[in-house]
Image 1 (cartoon, each protein chain N blue to C red):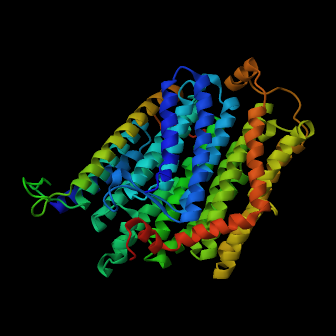
Image 2: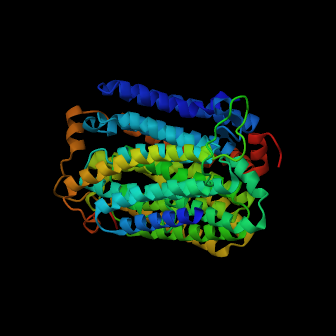
Image 3: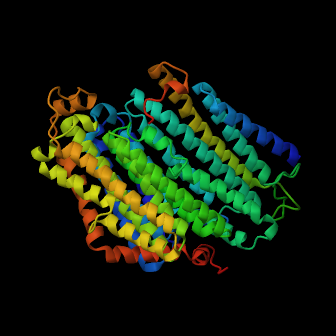
Length: 115
Length: 508
């Protein structure tokens, strides 16, 4: 399972970076979206995969019994998803406004502020 | 349990929320901006004073003891950074009263400014690495919105690069946090440092890989070589008060994170990581200053100088001796005040002459000698002329470099100091000394139209500039107490065991 997840995460990172290196700003944002998902899956995998063992405390006990899934990693991912959702919503609006103002969908045409 | 640790975060959050409630009344928002940043300044000074007297101040959020809950830690370095953030915030809030056009103020300028400051102070005070990521995102979102306030073409183009590279950096940071959590099973920085101290040799290589991920991520935030390209593409585009706030604070949050992580957590392979940092520092200094030499626009020159100055701070970390760290901390103190002030001066020049292009400016010293003096104080301090603050900062670093025998780094630092002086003299000659170019008046812009129709005086331009210039003089003329403060802060940085003991209550 870990190997499959590692491959998925690696593919996601690679795809995201490839998309970000394209010139179109739409593809740039798609790249950013994939990138944040790749990071979330990475945390999920790195914290250890446990199947079928939710971290529930049985009646009368004060701690879960046996090995259970780590809830903290899931809390991290939840936070990261919310944050990346907000930030990506901003990015989508930004490229829309940028397209309206600059009138191109090409990063190569957006070099006025460089140098 | 020390509640004053949370105050510098809560105050800007509170004032941000209250100013949102007064969305329609810019007058209230404006004064809330000044009162809020003033209160932040007060609380930060209280915090610094308490930290200086009592050592580490700890606050467990929700009363969950570390390492399980999120913990706020104020050590001397963090407290100093909070004070500097508050000073910059207060100065720019005053400056914004006169410089930000009314048409733009109504899009939530002041609430965003409070949010940015809350994010910056949160990043300086948290003792939890995932919480650090959250504060980074808070300040990033606020900075995105401030950056594009006005919606001009240059701002959009700059913002796309700024947003993309900063999000990339955040994702790298998040990935590194995830891997670190997988390795140690904790997010508390003190606990991570402790667990990594006991790690077996088999996994030592993985720790170094993770440390490099952190280095790249914070290197992007700090605008270090070769990761700085977002900075000169965007910093000259927003409102000048925003530029000043960014120039003073944002890259320094990256530098702070580098200092924190590479003194507390990743000290296993100093030989490798800090040598890499040393190269990074030298090349950052050089490329920044050479980039500035090629520029002829006021704010672009200053933007490139931010990069070269970041190199000096990283140099302090990279040499990793007690004296070098003192130099690094001292340099940050000097730099934040001076750099924010230079941007404020560039805004004043723009207000007076209507341009940032050196070619279109001139003759300002003849008309207004005081503006020239106000420029010279931070400019010469940036270049490192005695007796101003920059001299002592550079002196400590170079002395530390000579003691460790890092001859090349010292040579680069001295050369870059000289080239900084060249850049500052260039601005002085073009803007203040040469005769004003004859002919056409400056182009009519939104700002100038609204300035004239309001007829506001320049009082709020001079006040923060003069205040920051006085601070520069104070740091320069009474360097001893500041040096002692930096020395104590650096002493704490070099004693991770003390930090761990303060946070977790056990000595490793």
